Length: 134
Image (tube, rainbow, N blue to C red; front, side, top):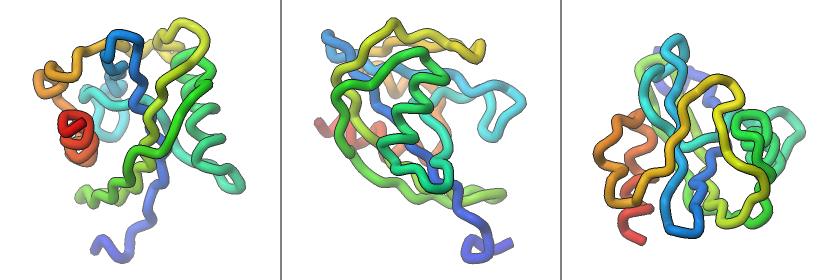
């Protein structure tokens, strides 16, 4: 199936930064698309939902946190062999609650310069480049 014939999955993702400048990443469940790789937390934008609403909902569902301060960081379009994704990536600089894997997924705070030590889906490479560029 060509990329033009595939439905694009719209995803809101958060680059969550703590007071020490570390980034929160989560490991994708093995049984999911790109399973076993690390990602920036988030999920699909539902019909009738803004990206900011989806981001806040997903971070609460996945991590048990309420995003308080966040702003758009970049958009990434990527075609995988089996699907296309549009990642709406937001930087989250303030939140309440203690992040934890509410769906059983491992989560980890990582210094920015250590992001390259983790395996991410291809679509996330542009996000990492943006973070490293400052």
